[in-house]
Image 1 (cartoon, helix red, strand yellow):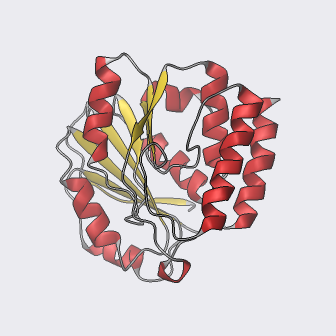
Image 2 (image 1 turned 90 degrees about the vertical axis):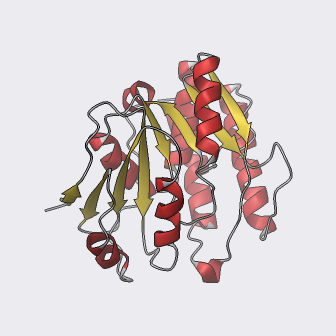
Length: 238
C-alpha cells in the first residue's frame, strides 16, 4: 500500500484552513513544530504526511495522536511535492497552507496572512523571507533562491521575491485547480509558475525565518535548484 491512513481525528467538516504538513526524518524537531502549529488560533485541520521517514519520526507520530489532525504514511520517500499532493487529497478547508515540519518557519504568521487574504479578496498569500531582513547561514542557498526567483519572474512576468518560501497560503480551490505533478522540491517552481500563469489575485507577506544547518537536517541541495530551473521552464511552456 503506497499511502496508509494511520489515524483521522478531524471533527470539523468545514475547517477554515487545511494545514498541509510534509514530514521526512524530523524526529528531533517534529514535536515542537506540531505543537506550534496546533496553537495557531484558527479554525483548522492538520494533515500530516510522513514521507517514508526512517529515523523514528513515524513511530513518534503514530504514538502521539494530535487531535484535529489526520496522519498518513507513505510507504517510501517520494519528496515534498508528493507529500503535498497526498495532503491535498485529504484537505477539506476553504484554504490550504503549507507547514514544513523543520521548524524554520513560524506558523503563527498564517493568522495575519489569512486575515489579509480575506480582507483584500486575495486567493493566495506567500510569506516572504526577503521583504524584511532575515538571517542567512549559507549564501549558496540564498543566491540559489534569488536566481530561481528571478528566472521564474523572467519567464512569467511575475514579481515574486521568494519563490521557494515554505510559507504558502492559497484558497483550496486554487490548490486543486493547479493539478500539481512534481514530486520533489521543484514543486515550489511549479506552484509559482502555475499561479502566475493563472493571474490569481496574490501578494507576499513579510515573515521571520530561522534557518538551520545541513548537519541539523536541512535537505534542499543544488541538485534541487537545477530541477527547479528545468521545472519552471517546463511549466511555463506546457
